[in-house]
Image (cartoon, rainbow, N blue to C red; front, side, top):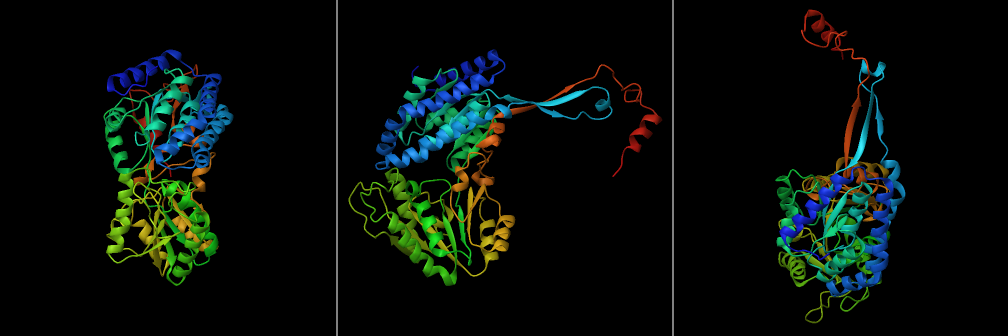
Length: 476
């Protein structure tokens, strides 16, 4: 099968998948397991060239990181789904309402696949954002069409080649192309649509899906806040944040974006963060362990955020050093932007790269108020040993997920839901909740042989006795 990049070809694939879905009827466990295993086999077969393609697309991304983040992360989701989905398929028995519960009526909830699911991946985790949701799409008995990001063209082309090699297109198809294809993809009448990317594009995807009343799962992002409580071990917190900021060059949707530090601990924390990051990445330019910014457009955006904040009076600390060498060098040291103006771009926009904001605070309530005054983030992080403060942060904020005394780890859990809230998205995948996200929960009521409605006065003509009987049941 070719990898189509036109709307008619895409529409043809979707129509064929939906027709095949309707014709096939029940999607038995063996079929679902075979599809999941095929996806696993695809990643095992193609893992080396896929890692090489991601390295080339980024202009520097260590193959080991790509294997850990994209290949092994995807395999973990696929294997978890493969090994756990069968009990999730079982009908869920429910109790019929009175008086039918005494007369042999039955009721249950069927868990059924929806049909054909479209999955739009993103460039920063180009395999994981396709294959992690695909795990639960297939486990739920659906078919799928993948749309890799055009920002990483070598990876997208190889994904298309691999999917075409391993799958029947009536089960899993793929389309490639630029923003025009992406827009056409979102406008198709999928039975469910998954999108990972920016909030702005997520809104456009949701608008397009609305014309078809297609349900959507949106995994977006936002300025994930990190609170350093006064009870935190600063060196430990700094090291774990540095490891998070260094992962993928800071280009992850759950990356720490704004760090709140008590005013009297600010200098100690900044020094610890610089030491920790430099220990992991002693140099920036040419360092194969440090992922490059994906392209010049994003590099200009991030450098512009930092330059604007500095021009407005913010202090900027750089680690491991302040040297940015050579035209075409897209690796950057970590820029720590301290107390920038509230109206600066770096305070308004998700950074999504090798820079971080550090804000000093005097009172934890002010931190919570500042977080709640912003859009709901995809992730929130708290460091500290004060149990009461930790609970206050958890109960007085709202985010997609939380990690305590660590960053990003909640997103790596395969037996718990992952998703956003508000501006950071809707819906979820991972675990049983991901299986249910891509399933239709269908209530079934099976009537008994005896119909009690006439005897119980539940049919017209209604009279005074019926009214009195109904009123008697209006109780607190």
